[in-house]
Image 1 (cartoon, rainbow, N blue to C red):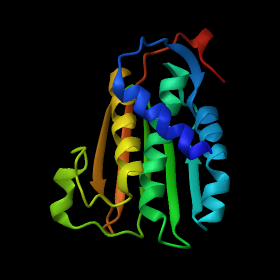
Image 2: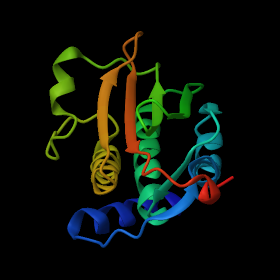
Image 3: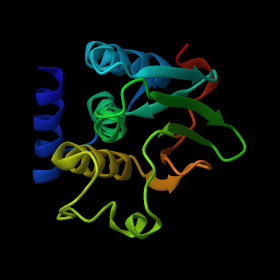
Image 4: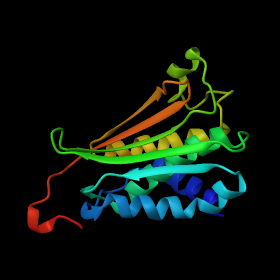
Length: 181
């Protein structure tokens, strides 16, 4: 049920413009919430989780849209792993004060992607997309939500030929008194 709900949210996000309501929030806590929603599905598919959060990861963002970006990225990678029993989903969240950005890395090393596919990831009509339509909707919704926050989403190969999604969000510097803990 959670997967269907995420896909519907993604389709709504892709079908129209939505005003952005930025509030201070703890990105690590939001990530934990989104990962909890996918826990049953990952357990059923026997997908392991390797997650790390480097504190602090406080940003000003629209909570619903940021959750959609995170869920879309997770859905994209989990869709790739549906037939890879025992695979591991790797998630790393870190803040970079030098770049004034917060970055989320979502990756897997079990599904090898051919070099020729890298230019197709953001093409909505890619017919043989690994992960199918769920991966397409998740990825495009994640990119749209990330861009609405002034960030960017990149798809790149991992060192072993898997897939890594990199979502970078500008910090939108909070004064020290307003930092979310």
